[in-house]
Length: 362
Image (cartoon, rainbow, N blue to C red; front, side, top):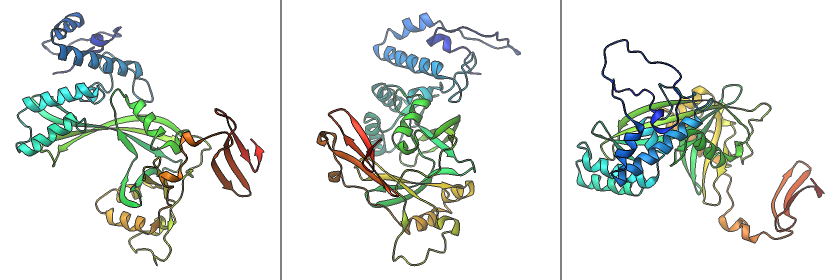
């Protein structure tokens, strides 16, 4: 009851690949794509919503292929539930849908201050809400990377940095799905931004979706979290050593806290910083049991004790970084040392760059 068959025919040039037969008596409602377009055209707002909805639906049809999603069928096109579509629509349309839902649903925040705060967040595109079955629902869609080594260890984000302030937080790396992004595009953005240090090391295996729903304490409404978990492995012959600075035990801090297990005390913790904004993340390879424990309420104290014993390498201050406008012919803008070799990247002209190894051009 309530299921759609061949909804793709409303938004694409669709060819049916089978026949449907009812096993029990049922009522069927048929919708004409042409009549739907004519009906929505009577209202400018509805037409804009229908046009963007159709674009997002079509994008999912043409992008539905393994390993990101199963191929589309007459019965199902992945990521086309209403809340999945809305999270990728244009921001102006998201705001319109959210404000309209807040004004017409009965289960919104009763406290007027909470209601005004929620409306402010909706109009500022900080929060997305929809109406489903007459009830207000807050929606969050996340794309998460579950990257594993051959031994089963998982890459975990174990902390967040704000300057030199560290906030322990054990979870899989991820981000919110943005407007006009299908899952594969959001994953690409995750790898090119927060995880640029492994962008060429990852081989995607499959994507699984899970949905949870709970009440938001801040706004007293139900929030649905859609987690698109992208399972991946390191490509063959790729090292698990990340090209990032590694934390070391802080000198003068004495013995390790007894709560920190021996297995973690020598574990490399890598630091990835943003581009001069003082923010960053800490990453480590963890076993399944370590990840589950450190991410639980029971493991919060152990995680905090572990990270507090580590010295975080200081990132260069913004004024220490060369901007693009500062580059000129002959400028050396990156240099490294590895063993007896030294490496440098140097501007050879206004548009060309060459690399050297101990003075030899490479």
